[in-house]
Image (tube, rainbow, N blue to C red; front, side, top):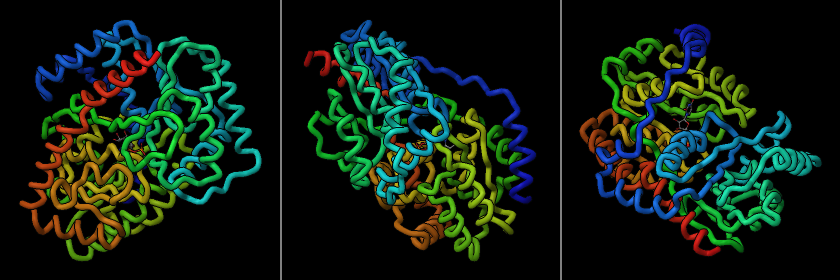
Length: 424
Ligand code: UDP
């Protein structure tokens, strides 16, 4: 199989297929996963917030972890009686090139912005501010792209929260100096891990990102369906499968994954699946995909799948079919894909960056690595020690169940809304 064939034939069929309607779970369905008492506690909190209106704003409706979370969090908040509206900012190519540059620089990459970047950022935020209304009780703005919408708060009674999903511990000073005055106009900020924060003049809260165990991305699947998906992509289900699911983004280091795979492949029979797609706020995807294809050239056991955004069931199936799941990011926010794999009891080999070490406890719920060599070594170790690998996956499932399920997210957000309401 060649990479090009995968891209143009089978995946094209999926692109053209109608999206499968998501199986929408209701709040009481989660009792089977987390217990009735947790659902009871959610309802008790929600009662105190009845009718409290919330708006959440981010920069993309599909692709990436934030959209993944909002897609489920918002209907569930609504169902609990906290009416929540989701809006996505609009912006041109230039704006998203700027925000991707900011994103990389906030993650510690060198900032290479042009003179007009700050102005482009301000102008697009202003256009969105004029287009949108903010009369809800709470406005939650996700990530840096729409941070300047806070200019709309003048004279309004709404409480404003900035929810930062990225690791701000080593930002480019120039970008952070520009963004910080906006951030400090909020009533509160929310980070995914204590180590991600910056000293701020506003309160900071901790909310871990979470996965939805009943969404198409994570719910149990019929093994026949899993097999069928794998075979449809030309992958052999009877041979070991190593998988990384990620947007084609350099910070996810897909080329590093291929390098590690090539080292493993010299000794162990296995296939590599790199499955990803784009996000409308990420203009670099196509270039990175080309780099990945080039790095994979000549090896028919490397499967590069550029998937459409509604491929939740297919991604679920690929994760379930995997022998080992890899997340070799160079920088990371939280890394939802790790929890997704752990929930499916998969042994995970992942970089010790961003939120990954809170999910992967080394040698307990997965293996942490720091390099291509390290990734290759741990993959080979797990391929040779399947019982140990299985135990990692089982422990990982418990770790996610304890800490990273959507019911926790609902609870933390409602607690935050209540505490801000009381501080009025
Ligand atoms: N994802 C997806 N399709 C893709 C690539 C990723 O649905 O082609 C999902 C993935 O399953 C996960 C989210 O997007 O739920 C990625 O979140 P993560 O926190 O791992 O990374 P981010 O993209 O936000 O940096």
